[in-house]
Length: 138
Image (cartoon, rainbow, N blue to C red; front, side, top):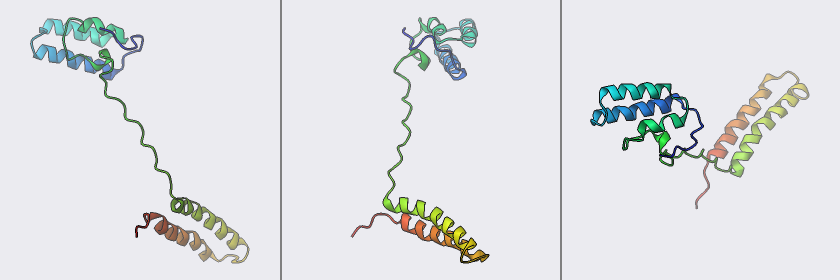
């Protein structure tokens, strides 16, 4: 039984999978309780993947997934973000620009008028509704 990367250390989850496989062999009558006790102690003390191989060499499936290379479920690839449309790019840059303009207006032309800071909020609402519209279909 070839173990993929036998020099790797075992995780707690891999030890638990091995114990679950041994429990299944007890349930089906392949192992008696004394063999299960002995092997489960060895699984609990195992540090490397190669330490599990002899414990399952005389048993058919189920075996822990760590001992059967290629049988592990592939890890899903992270979802690739969809490219932004030009409307989304415009909306995401319009609000910071509006905030900068509001600060400039506050200190220059509007001198102390606090309502000038409503400009970024208004731009955010307009840009959000503009960007959330899907592509137009005629």
